[in-house]
Structures are given as structure tokens and as C-alpha cells.
Image 1 (cartoon, rainbow, N blue to C red):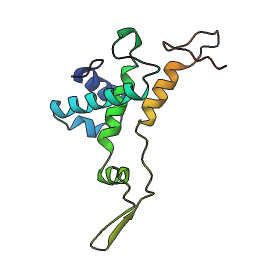
Image 2 (spheres, helix red, strand yellow; image 1 turned 120 degrees about the horizontal axis):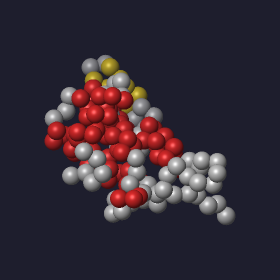
Image 3 (cartoon, one colour; image 1 turned 135 degrees about the horizontal axis):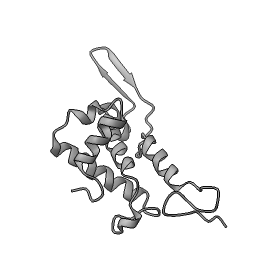
Length: 135
């Protein structure tokens, strides 16, 4: 079970905030939970220097997990095949060509939410829980 989000919260988010949420809307609760679990695991692994599942004061915005879940659900078979290096498919004279590059593992909207969470406010403080120091 996901640590930081619930199906009910995600349902509310998608009902109120996301216009094209059908991939989420049509799922049963078991599949929704799988999507949330997978999204949370991927995001916390990818952003481990910024967020920590073991410390509730260092959780990422829930919206990032919801958007990551929808991103995963929107990926069709051609995207999954592309992740394995397939560059083309053909069936009965219909051909689909792909770049052969992996699609980003992180949803663009989740990235934007996390970047916004980490932005500096202009007074030296940060919206998020962490700041960057470049030396």
C-alpha cells in the first residue's frame, strides 16, 4: 500500500483537477492501488536526494504521485515496446515507426510539480523542504 497517498485522495484530485483522466477513472481499486504504489516507488527512488518516504516531513507533493500514476496508465504497448528497443511494428501492411529512444520514466507534470516545490521564493527560502547550494 502506498505510504503517502490514498485512492480516495487520488480520485478527488482527478475528478477536480484533470480534464483527461479516463485511464484512471475506468480502473478498479486494485489496479489504482498498483499504479499509486508503482508511482510512489519510482518517484521516491528517482528523487531520493530531495524526498524521503521514511520521514513524513520530507514527503513530496501528493499531486506528483497522482500525475505519475496517470502517466503510467496512459502508456500504451508501443511505448512499452520502445522501452525494450523496438523501433518498428507492422501488422497487415500497417507499420508504426518509433524513435527507439526510451520515454522519460518521470511524468512531465510530476516533474513540474516537484520543480515548483523546490523553487526559491526570492528571499533565500524555498517552497520545498530543501534548498540547493552550488559551490
